[in-house]
Length: 287
Figure (cartoon, helix red, strand yellow):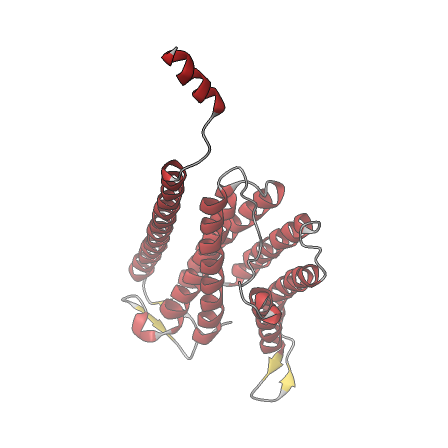
C-alpha cells in the first residue's frame, strides 16, 4: 500500500461501499420509520437476477482476496514476498474476507436474521483489527506520514465504536449512520493520503518525495505547516461528508413526507362507508 495506487484503489472501494450503505440506511430509516428501522450490515440489490442481489458482498469478498494476493505476491519477480508490512496490510483484508464470506453464506442459506448479531460482531472486528494493526504499524511512520496515519486512526476508532454500538443496538439509527459515514471518511482520507504523500505535485511547500518514498519535509517550519494543512484537510473532508448526509436526509425526509401527505389526502377524499354511530346521531338531532 506504500504507493499512490495502493491508497487510491482501496480508498475508492471504501467510498463507494460507504456511500451505498449510507444511502440505503437513510432510505430505510425514512421509509420504515424510527419504530421499524433495523440496521443491515449489507444491502442487497433489488434485481430479478439472484446472483446480482448479493453483489455488495461478492465485490467485498473479491476485493479482499485480490488485495491479499497483491500484498504477498511480487508481480515484478513473479514470486511470493512475505514482508512484514505487507503481511500487516494483508491481515487487515483477511478480517474483511472473513466478514464478507460469513455474511454471504448466511444470505445464501437464508440465515440472515438469526445471524445478524454475529455479522455485527465480525464487522466490528474488522475495524478493531484495522485499528490495532494501524496503530502499531504507524509507529514506523514518522514526520508528515505519521501524522496522516494518526488522523486515520481517529476515523477507524469511530468506525469501531459505531460498529460495536450498532451490533448491540441494531434498531438505533445514529450508530448505523455514523458507521456508514465513517467508512466514506476512511476512503476519502486514503485517497487524500495517496495524493499528498505519494504525488510530488501535491506535496506541501517545503516537502518533497524522494525515490518513490513518502513525502519528507526539509525544515521544521515546513513540517509544521504541512501538519496544519493535514488538519485542515481532515476538517474539510469531514464537513463535506456532513453536508452530503444532511442533504440526503432532507431529500428523503421531504419525499417521505410528501408521500405520506398524498396517502392521507386520498384516504380523506375517497368515499367510504359511513359510520353508523354518526348516522344515528344525525337522526336524533332531527327528532
